[in-house]
Amino acid sequence: MASLDLEAEALRIEPQIIAIRRNLHSNPELSYMEKRTAKLVADKLRDLGIEVKTDVGGTTGVLGVLRGEKNGKVVGLRADMDALPVTEDVDLPFKSVNQGVMHACGHDTHVAMLLGAAELLSRHKEDLSGTVKFFFQPAEEDGGRGGAKPMIEAGVMENPKVDFVFGLHIGGEYPSRTFGVRPGPFMAAPDAFKIRIVGKGGHGSRPHETIDPIFVSAELIVALHGISSRIVNPVEPFVVSVCSIHSGTKDNIIPDDAELLGTIRTLSEKTRRLAKKSVSQITKNICDAFNAKYELSFKEDAYPVTYNDEKVTKRVTEILKTIKGMKTFGIDVKLGAEDFSRFLQKAPGTFYYIGTRNEKKGCTFPNHSSKFKVDEDVLKFGASSLARLALEFGKS
Image 1 (cartoon, rainbow, N blue to C red):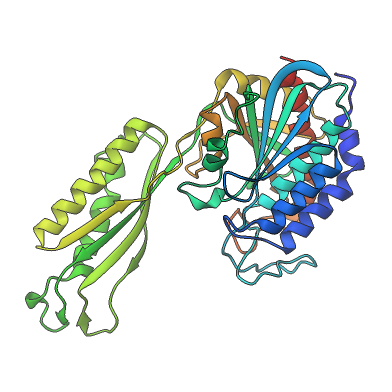
Image 2: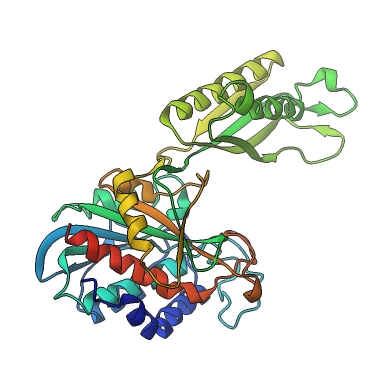
C-alpha cells in the first residue's frame, strides 16, 4: 500500500479534475436543484464501474459504492454539490452562466476532488480493503434539514454500515497547499431565528401615541448582543448576530411592525440551550417593557456541532503529513456550520480543510464572496488525500 504513488496518479488526471470543476462552476445550481450536477456525477461514477444510486433521500443526492477485492472496513467520503445565490464578480472564461448563482463556497471543487478520488480508487480495487461509499449530497447551504439528513434517513450509512466517514472543504482563508485539521468540536451549531415585533403605527411627529417597533427593535438588538459577554461565558466560542431588520415605508410614518433575522453559533449543547433560552427571555422582557407584542421562532432542524473524533483525527493528521507538496497544520475552531456534522453523528471521522489562498493568482477573497477564486493547483491533492484516507482506513 505504501508503494502506491497516489499523488503522481492524481497529477496525471489533474486536467480531468479541473475540467469537471470548471464545468460545474459555469453551471451552478442552488440547494435541492442540483439536477445537472447530480447527472454529471452519476454518469462519471458509472463510467468508472462504480455502483450508483440516484435521487437518494427524495432529493438530488447520489450514492456511489465501490467494493474492494479484500475484506476490510467501510469508509464514507462526502462532497456537497449546491451553490449560493451570489452574483459572480470574477472575470473567468468559465464564469457562472446562471445569473445570480455562483459556486462561491467551492462546492464545485468538492465534487471534482471526490470524483478524482473515485477514479484513483477504482484503479486500485485490488489494493482496496473493504468498501468505499461516495456521498454526493445536495443542500449543504440550506442550514436546516439540509442534504445530509435525507441521505442518512434513506440508509446511506447502513447496509453495509459505515465505519469511518471523511469530508473535505476548500478554504479561502488558508494558504494554498495546506491541510487544516482539528480534533474535537470544530464547527458550530447554527440556530437561525426570526423575531416579529408588533407595535402600533402612527405619525412620526407623535411617537408617544404609538408603540414604535423600530425603537423596540433597537433596544432588543443591543440587549441580544450582550448575551455573549453578560450571560454566556466570554471565553466560550459563541456568536449571536442580528443580520437583517425590515420595517417601515416612509420617513414620517412609524410602522406597525418590524422583522429581525439573526443567527446563534455555539460549540456545545449546553451553551446552545442557554443562548436560545436567553434570546427568548430577553425578547419577552424588552417587548413587555414597551407594551409591544412579538412572535419568535427558531429554524427547525438546525445542524448540530461538527465534532471530529480525536483518535481518528490524529491518524488522519499523520496520513496527511505524508503527502508530498502539502503542509498540515492545526486550525482554530470555526463558527461556520456544516451538515457533514450529521454524518459524524453516525460514524467516527474527520472534516478537514484544504487551503486555496494564493496572492500571486489573485485567490485572496474568502468563501461566500462574489470575488472568490480557487487555486486549482490544490485540487489534485484533495483528490489524492481522500483516496489515501479510504485506502488506509479501509484496512484498519
